[in-house]
Image (cartoon, rainbow, N blue to C red):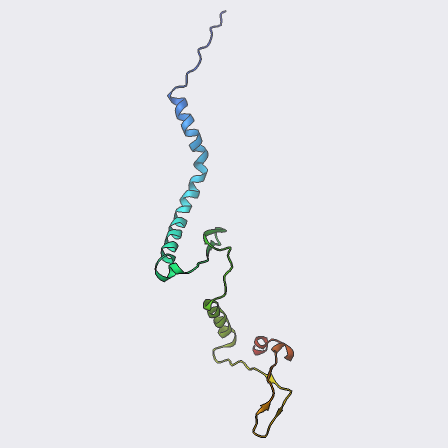
Length: 144
């Protein structure tokens, strides 16, 4: 019995197609992620359009949009930076106080003095603010 030498295989059309498709198959699991990023790119574009026009462009912005359901950040701009409190922060504080205390609540400020009052009712000396903690609690806690 004679053994014929085998012919070497030449890389043909099928091998070239396989060599081209193999890297694409490795990227296939990433395709759904790129599809999810399209809305995020649109969000980023829309935010940047808003903050880069008119007077808004003069401001220093810190923004983070976080999707709780996805557990990840959708957009971030200077989110790691610290900002000085602005008037906007006062709105949240005021809203919380109004919700807790009601719109008709009036704070009571206690003052004291170690001076005497003259015959016309004038204090001869300085007034001292009495902190709420000196009275055994915080003013807001006592207001409830």
